[in-house]
Image (cartoon, rainbow, N blue to C red; front, side, top):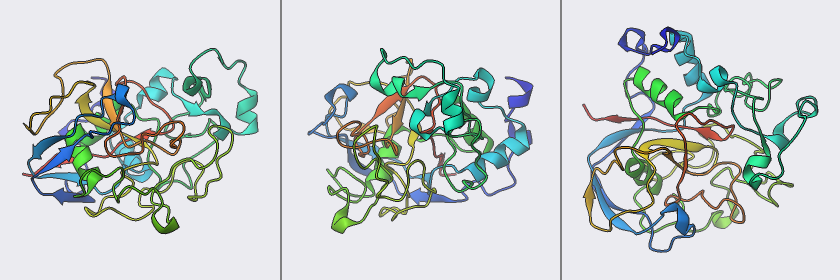
Length: 303
């Protein structure tokens, strides 16, 4: 491990291990769905999963929390080391956009509207942006490896996909969202997602064009905030699209793979383009990938 990225116990944080976490009781729940919307993502089948009790962060890890980690350890994120991350092009300033010499429109639509080498967790929307007024927003441009390093420093870990989905559902069964099946019950926005025509017009009817503070909107019945929308969240599991319908106990996914599972969708999701702001939805990235809509929250075992 790089000396500058040594996050061993000698740099342990001077905070309680379970600070800002919620204790979720052991229980059996229905994971996945028998009505998959994105079949290729392996959202099905619905199956019984039993989990031991565990702790889960009440909200996504914020810029304030990640800055404490960096200040204590000198950690350098992979986006900073590689000079390679993804920024949503429409969020760049005119000055930063002018620096772009070429956008590869021959690539997939999602990739073509993101630009490499223009951001980091300290500069979430281009090199001339800062987190000065976003300390309570989720930290972004965080790879899976970065997230593991932070969780290790806290004496915690990333949640498994099953733990994450259990937390998302908040005790409800067979529902799309943490609160039910209606995205905006009684006209109330419950998540930070895209409103309008993607990617040309975001009305920001939910109050935000990009990230929202980590405790925005109403928490679910477990007291967890922003389980869908806002930013994608890393989980511990390797990616796999084939799931056995038989009941399982504390599942952890495959033992190896090339991509890691991320859950929850982001502020760029809507029903027409990326309908993954649902509890059963899932996607994947390589462990060294990062983007301006990708963050995480930690979990911890019960001592």
